[in-house]
Length: 219
Image (cartoon, rainbow, N blue to C red; front, top):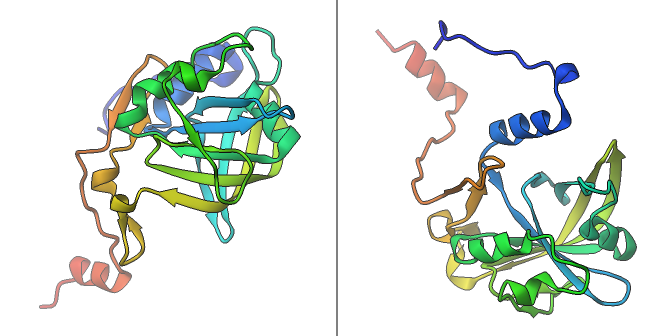
């Protein structure tokens, strides 16, 4: 809509919460990483983060943005655990565990574990000490490469050491993930709005030679 009116927001004039609201409403949909981590005493933590995606394939690299606690400004348990142990697991959030994921986002006191509260169980991972969530359809076992601290943000860079994927979701031809059967969900804003991934469209990439033919049809 070239004639549509636009509203400008200069970040120098916004409060932090306003910036947060606009950023997470525009960077959508966002995959959700339900991260399991472990402290030095072996206590497990599970927390969802939607500032997450893969950022490289050789090696396989994922990145997570983990902000400090808004009330105290202290680092969250997840980043403290990863900095201490160097490992974490990204459990893929699908429709089946969406409600449990949301429970894991509850601000429980330190003596209450998110996993049993959410009705989730764990199984051993293959490449890291941190266990993965048994109910998750897929998981990425990771080790910390580095963590950048920018303001009140921690940007965690992790290398994927192993994929765990439920057998029925794997197309061996690639192998590919059967996206139409994974039923992953994505976060849309900060108002509890999520999206399902059942309504998909196919837009194949166009080779340049084919594009030329489309733009300049033969006489």
